[in-house]
Length: 330
Image 1 (tube, rainbow, N blue to C red):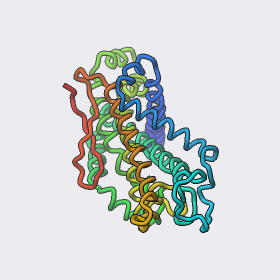
Image 2 (cartoon, rainbow, N blue to C red; image 1 turned 60 degrees about the vertical axis):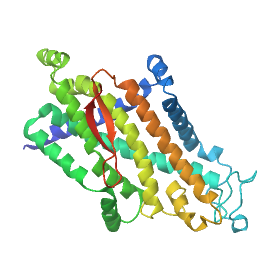
Image 3 (cartoon, one colour; image 1 turned 180 degrees about the horizontal axis):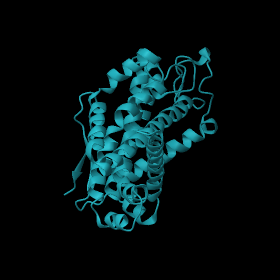
Image 4 (cartoon, helix red, strand yellow; image 1 turned 45 degrees about the vertical axis):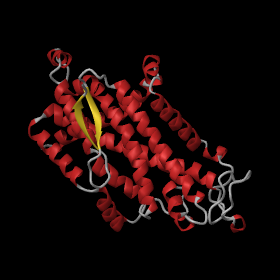
């Protein structure tokens, strides 16, 4: 393959990746449109999830303003305080404000989850479009790579990466991206195979539109709804897994304000001060619940129920991951 052809292919994939991320953000804005918002309001749990997500994002952005204390300020004279007016959720074993650390922990959890999901989109969506539209040997190669990525358990891969590069949340995020792009590629490939036979795509080909133009303007736009749903659910999965890896010491490291780290620090106080363990656990549960309910609501609102392609969950992975497949809605 010539250098010019390699450059052209790389430019093409980069364009699709950027377009995919843009369309995901654009799709999230669609929810705020009046016609969609009316349907969305009827989904009470989904609307509640959206409100919780909005509040979490605002608290994360304005953490220095809404936090009552410095989350890293150590004062052993006030360690393990019970909830009071000055410290609404009490203090931890080093005298740090638990509420402030929970608020700053939003930044770590949401930032990691959103960035990891964006990178999954940037890899999985272009490869899925390329596999579905081109077909043939290229389709076989991409799908075999997706099969390989799906066979590796995330826990063992995380241990391997941490053993080589050291424990950090960035290394854990790399594991998620390398393994979890495959469901996006599979979903998009299935939709593209269906869409490329549609009349509007055939008309675009007949009018002389370039392949890149057809993919970016017609294929990607119409294939993005299930991807939005899956990406939202993936954010919830990443939040939960990041907290889990931080809990066992493979993710964020102390004294970082992270929900998993807070859970790990409070283990030895389970009997004497159970509230220390309760607060970060509730924060993780609330965030995961919000994104899951929001994703389920998006699935009902953005994807029509009359036989169109829909993304559904299948909790059948042995290592706790959530697999996704393409089904027809009845």
